[in-house]
Image (cartoon, rainbow, N blue to C red; front, side):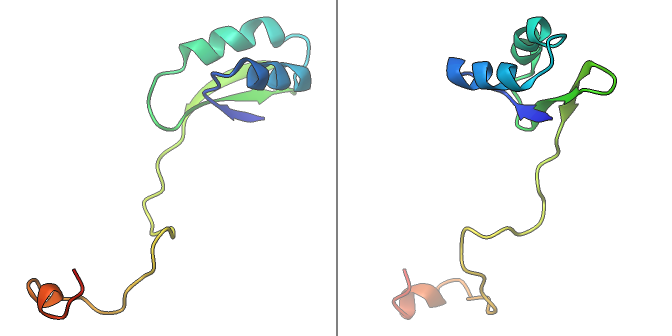
Length: 84
C-alpha cells in the first residue's frame, strides 16, 4: 500500500484499520518522519512486514488542466487581437 503524508486523524485511523497489527505502532512515527517535500510517501509491504520511505518524482509531461494550443502567439499580437 502507498500512502502520502497524512495529517487528519481520521485518515490515519483509516490507514491503521487497513494495516496488519505489526505496523500500527510504527505507522504514526513513519508518517511524522516523512520530509515536507512533494512526493514523500511510505510503502507498506505485507509480505516483508516492513515500511519503506520513498520519494515519488513529479510528473514532467503535459497533463491537462488547460487547453493545448497548436499555435504560438507572438508577443504584442495578443493585445492587438484583444486576447488579453
